Length: 390
Image (cartoon, rainbow, N blue to C red):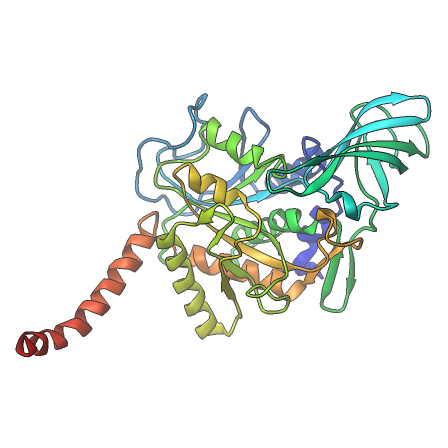
């Protein structure tokens, strides 16, 4: 249980798009207690940095026109960056009249799945439950009918600006399984804290690694990846930087619960950086051969992630995901999401292996060079026969 205590604590935090303050406060306290460098950009995204060994210098930034770099230590040295979300789908009260409240839903919740679901609100008062009395819908570009606005009957006084989520129970465990509201989004943040804890406590042998490790915690991920794009605009990311998104994904072929973490090769927006994915796969394979830790490799073209969006803007991206069952927050069921703790811990192990073997932004280039050398060696023996055959 102690191996997942930070993960469990994050999953217990109430959060919704634009209302991530409790999760951010937990992350900030975590970093402060461990002496990690903390910065925030103008949009509230939070960055924790473990200095490690200083890598090779890289000049310039990439992305949208930005408003000044946030001033990370050793500026100019591109760190190995992991990125995770701090929100999950939820709603915000925009009007209150008597005992009726109106809320707008953030994120895509299929209208057909909402039924008689209850909500729980946080904010100005103690948590309040609310019953949905009616709703309006909108149609996504993909043609799905999702919840837009809700009329609610709250059990107690609520205020404009309070935020709410589906009223699922808190974190619980059943054997190997951990159940939690919003796990698909928040699992990445919890696992990054577990990883940073290992780094600080010296339980990770860095070996030849020259990279600093940077954990970027972004806001409003379910609002079309607004936090990741804001981080790009604010200049958090350096040119040549490798960014690995860490999140959950619905269980599906190629991403089965109990099969280990998934090295995700792409999403609905396209394939991720093939060089980076190849390098990560090679590290994962060595990890599997040496320690027997399972992992999976899959494209997973349904849905999109922060990695896909950042890749469209020129960053070298990949993703590591944990298979999730239930996916209740996204409307595919009316139960909390649940996942294997063994998959979660194996995900931390895999990230630790990547850090231990990382040799800077040139890692993917070096892996490609190694493979070219192997192919060239095999080709050399065939070359005389090819000439003779002509």
